[in-house]
Length: 418
Image (tube, rainbow, N blue to C red; front, side):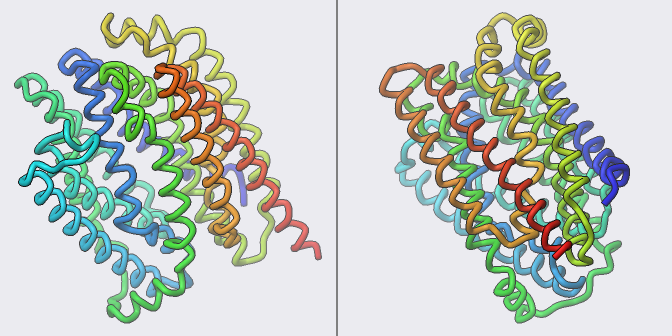
């Protein structure tokens, strides 16, 4: 693998996603003046359920399209994932209707009210888009991925602003998100024919699903625990603290971790496809991956130091006085963000070498550490303490994961020499 090729393809993906996220983040300059911290706190609670449920809707089968043996197998497993996503989404819709109409919404669902009915369609649209995205990734159609990201982000941003101006709060935020994801989904679907996927039967889909059962067994389980633990501040701690404080943390999290997720997702997609090809052809990979991690870590440290010193004036200027306090959470999250950038960019390594079972143990440990952090914060009556301990637990786990991913690539290099 060559760094120049990786950088070029990642630039297309990251550039498209950066434009999409730039639209979303730029909208916050307006949205934070139309919606209160409490409105954003409720939206953060809403979306935390989406993050968790989306993993169940596809069971991560979409990732197997990249490592499928041929185009027919990739088409079969992706269609299986689409059917699974539809079934799960319809089941969620039925459950949401029953709970809402009977007035028995549990826990953090209760403040959402009728907005729980928006959860199933959003799960469906995001799940379908992820399946299409990995198909386009297999065929290196990064431009189409970037286009769909921009369509979705642009639609969501415009609609949220319109709803805010019309005074449709706080529901304007989740409604805009649903419609934006639907727009991205449609754009993927319109260009799907250009991939030339062969027709497959339901039996072929089931056979492909059995072949790639490591993805639901280990990858989905790992991602579910990681996502669940990552959303513990909203799923658990939010029930014990002021919703406005949760909103401040949510905004800090958005501007700290969202750029990290943007870059790592782009690098991970490109490296996943290229590394899988290199391993199939028994070519070297370690030199490129080690250099990539060193460059990424160096850049993360520089940006992190700048963010540490300038977060307070930037947040106050951009979002107004009522968002004072965000910078405190930004500083707490920075070490986690820097280490997560390296770790999540290499998440594909366990898929390439089929070491998902071992990787699962790392995420079990992170879940336990994060849960202990949130519990301690609740017991001490401090949301900020909970977040600080939670961020430290996350940073330590991502540091160990990065070392483990690199160790696997070096072990593969030794096998080539042997």
